[in-house]
Amino acid sequence: MKTFLIVLFSAIFIWMLVMTTLTSLKMPIWDAFSTFGDNPWAVATLWDAYFGFLTFYIWVAWRESRNLMRLLWFILIMALGNIAMSLYVLIQLFRLKPGQSPSLIFTTCNE
Image (spheres, rainbow, N blue to C red):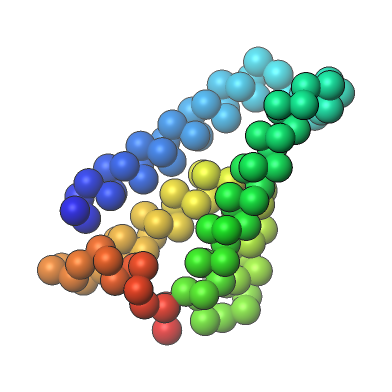
């Protein structure tokens, strides 16, 4: 299961980096905002994404014991979205000792 999760979150991380880079080369993000509000589905999707980021962040805040790390991850998640989220999960998976179940990252806090 750990290998599957590492492959999955690595693929998400790489895909999001590539897509973000390619999209940015076609249109800088600041150019997209001029017409963004004209599409109600774009606005709804953005709200949906940020509520998802916030939901994920609540789990991160529960796991992290230091306020500095909580703040850092909040900024990263809100700025980078799924790039930061997949990186966070990968870090947690690689912190597991050999033989430990991946379920530990969902049931324990970082101490």
